[in-house]
Image 1 (cartoon, rainbow, N blue to C red):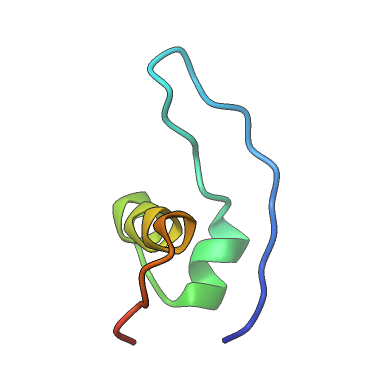
Image 2 (tube, one colour):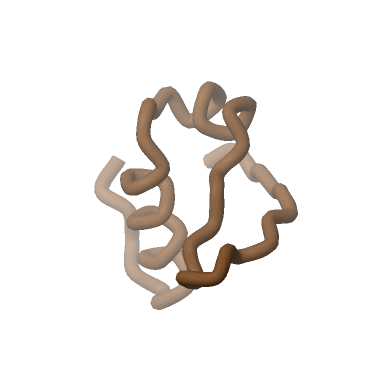
Amino acid sequence: MESLSFTSIPDHRGRITIPASVRKKLKVKTDSRVLIVIKKILRGEKDER
């Protein structure tokens, strides 16, 4: 799996914005799918891709 990194400051609701360049590399259109993958990685779960 390719390694990606980015810096984002959470907004007042605690949500982060995924940069378009990162979404493009992951081939997803919405932030929600990327955040699900990030949460799984942080929890130590395997991603099924």
